[in-house]
Length: 210
Image 1: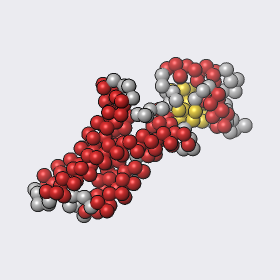
Image 2 (image 1 turned 180 degrees about the vertical axis):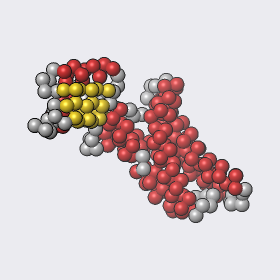
Image 3 (image 1 turned 120 degrees about the horizontal axis):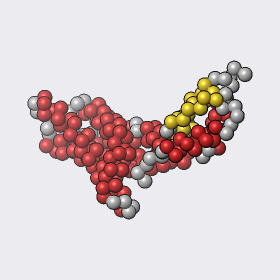
Image 4 (image 1 turned 90 degrees about the vertical axis):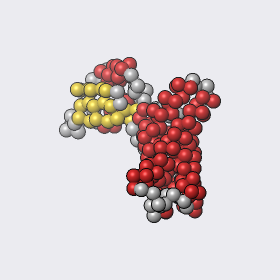
């Protein structure tokens, strides 16, 4: 009986507006054993139900609880991450290749810091341009495409760029350039680093570019 009286709180996926909140409140309001039900966009807490009953109620209302076992969401997140990686790597390694071609090693400290940041910025820019182009070709307006490309994947791109840049800095020991034999490893790290975040955002908020 003590377990039934415990408060349980959990993340709810697929909620996007106050209408979703009302729908979930109405559903749990019809359950006699549910007490002190509190619903917000993306979460629910209640007393009088076991955790299993709370999960079952959320799903019966047409939503889902967050978990890491949704294979369809993993596939979509992997697809999105692949396209993001293509865009980021163009700017990242393109800039580093230019550094190597001009042998930019003896530069003032301030310039060195700026030149270290520039591949990341160029990677973010090319990724947004790449994503925007794909979305426009899918029929979205240019404005909506730019907004979606930046809004959905910016954090993912930063994580991705940080991973690739970190591998490159280790491979070159801080020199400005690129060692091409390490590029596959950098791409692998760049792909894997943001993948859990992309799944989380897709599963919880239902947001994806493609």
